[in-house]
Length: 352
Image (cartoon, rainbow, N blue to C red; front, top):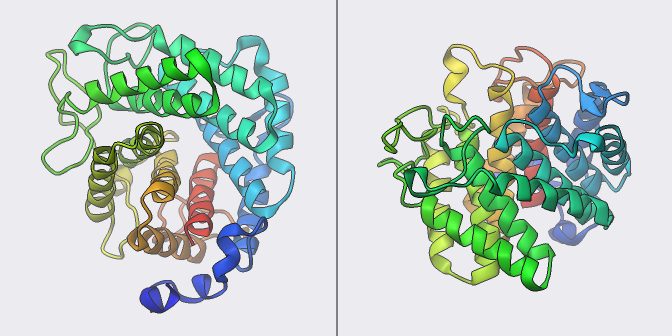
């Protein structure tokens, strides 16, 4: 594999022996990069409320998930310790709010925590969040869940998260519960794939108009990513290879059309201004590329992730802060930018 990828992978991949895929601890230099990036992210963690300063509520779910994955790669307990504290500080609300997509992010983070710790309480919480999300489904536009509980917008991200969480829960439960989650995942994909939100370029637009047509709004990177993880798990449940075909087309379109001239992922808002939500998006895409690669391995996914990781690390600040522009220059530091870029470093290690 190293010979085929050659200079593109460079020093990063040369340091990774073939046995690295099965190794419990990542080899250098990835271990150094992920250690320092995760430690920097941890400076924003607030133990008093279990969130990450400088971010919104949903960003904290993604930051925690990035730290959990980093801990798994590094063989330490920082991520699980943060998860336990965040759970304890916020369980009174059961992590619910007015936005179904926020609940989906937290649901998937608790699935990650369950996978790493085996603690049943995290799975119970993820199932509870899914149940609340399911209340957002109705027949407006033929199905799908709403973005928020005031029911004013049907769009891509909550439905991609609903698909992903349903499939993930089906794989981790048994009996009638597993069958129920599987049916929800199948129903969601059948609806989503026929909405027209996937445009002629093979990219997912943001959502639907009031007339239930593709609204032509921004093709955010995370809308190309979350669905990949959902389809990968749904393939595990069904063995339906058409799901992998659909996922591969989405991944290829995103890597081709949402990258800059250097082949590095580029958010559409970067030309003007990205807010604290949008700075989170790119890492989510690369994270889900890992999930797709687990069921449909591709050297192009590995090359893409490593190329992006090399760019991320090269453009860091002196304090190992990671910015929005993965090709550089470094712009600013916050937990959203840091955790998104950490997702990229984690993904490169996993794919290599």
